[in-house]
Length: 202
Image 1 (cartoon, rainbow, N blue to C red):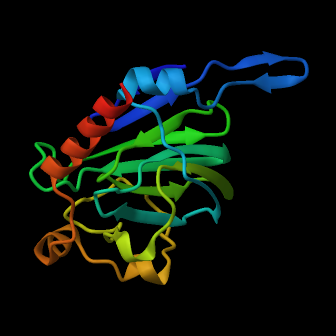
Image 2: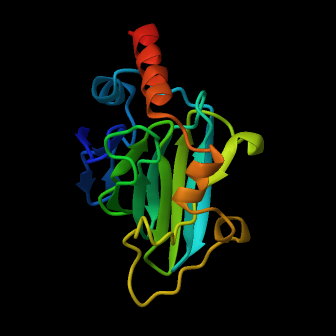
């Protein structure tokens, strides 16, 4: 398993080794040792989610209050997605920046998104199945969103495809509105939270 940092601090791309033969393919899609070596602490799994989406569906930008936040380890099990991580941590050197990575069912790559970062994806094929390992269970009172079509962010959604949004995502505020409302996480709080967990877990 190879771990590569993205351009956003706190987001990492994990590339597994695919072992194929005439029966098919075997891989380790997650290993604690590889994760701990890259991130500095273990992944505290609390919940796993599966979403199935049709082409053009955009889910996000989602994030949760920190602490405890909700870190995610995202994989595409069927089809292909454009996965986007957005730095929404107020005070971060890369605030308002994003990185976009294609995940698919062939390479089996995974994207880790630390607590406090925003996450969204777009379905690029007729149907996609996406799995999320989550560090915290879903808690509606701590969950927030930013509009994925916010022109200030200008996320790289595919041209010529109408974005399909849920009513909740379509009604989400812009990044500037969320900042004014005080719902965005603090970079200092997020990094302190991560550092404390790394120290406690060795």
